[in-house]
Length: 113
Image 1: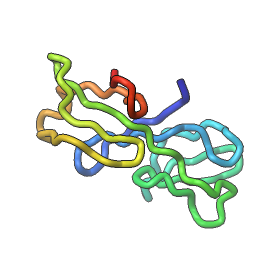
Image 2: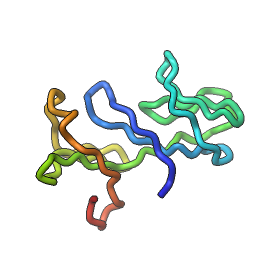
Image 3: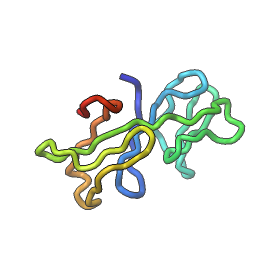
Image 4: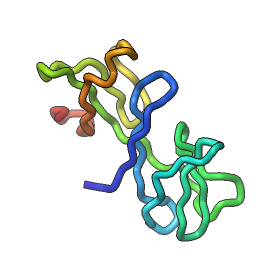
């Protein structure tokens, strides 16, 4: 398992990002600033939560990778999923989002759990 961070997007869907900085592998913080960024304290790289992109001039040059996920209801039915490339399948009712569980999805070819 690799460290990850979870946020809720404006659309109500989860945003899962690797918490491993793409500069030297430090663990980034989970506090989101007013501009929607999280900070790697090792060498001061800020990453946009939505896109994973580092700020201009940061030591980190690559974005934080997105992590695929699945949302399941209480009966273990997959309601929605997002692959690590950002493709979303399914739709959720935002008013029922708090009743769903988030699981990290396995890469294609594997069974999600």
